[in-house]
Length: 355
Image (cartoon, rainbow, N blue to C red; front, side):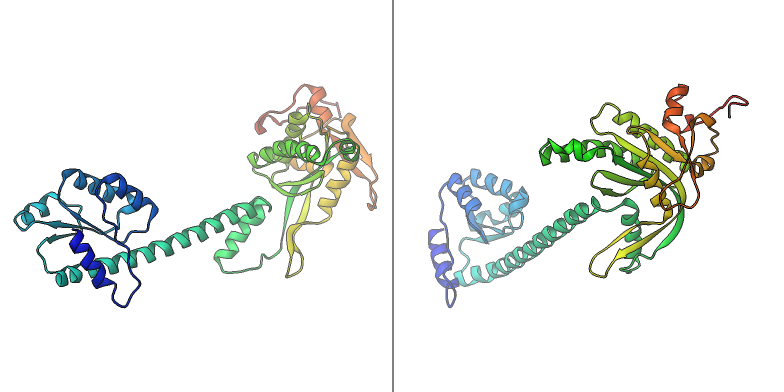
């Protein structure tokens, strides 16, 4: 073996950089070289049996599956080796002339180089794809679910513009009362943790109910739902989940037309909800008791609920020509003892003449 490798080294090195050949006597040394050095081929004899077992296990390892293994055999054992050494890529008679050995090995070496290049390219592509998937997952967290779904639809059509559209929805606007005072004596990290604890509850409940978070605005959030009944239930349940938390939201619910459109420029834009319905929901939450829910007459009527006059308030909002009627739905359900659980339970029965 030493003679063969020395002569093969001399023959392959003509006009090229000198390749390195490692002649090893034991498996431990072979393993060390395999894991520390880039190997192009293994030349081995068919004795002892321990070597063959090692090479067989090596070829079963995905890391070394494409590493060519050439077994040099005595002439008398050639036919036996082809049957008993299936993992070998090539069996060569030990008496094969050197020139013929090089001719046999050259295609294997070329195939190994091609495989290495291919594996490297695949690995690079996998890294690029993984980075893109991670980037997509990262971006997905920072935009509304509705925008993401519409963006996917138009991307499939090879369109880089999301057209605006109008629809009628229930808007749920939440804001923290006294947030400046809450944050005054806390470290920024503690303030962020408080917000995230509350927003974790909000987002989990909104998405579980089939709604969407359009945006977070510091200590405020804007959620949307196509079903006004679900929106009111959602607001009530959010307040119930947060009643023992230090963060108290004022929640206003309104129903009406909005436009989901693009705001910004070609360099940077948001796809968001625009319209008086959004502004009105924000105005309603401004007069809501912290921890409570006020719903406009429009959204209450849309649900088909009939509430007692005791919980009805007529208010004049800034920028509105006409007074707006709102209902204190949170107080009603708490005082009536019929605070809703599942959506099907959100039904109001008012005794005759009570309103």
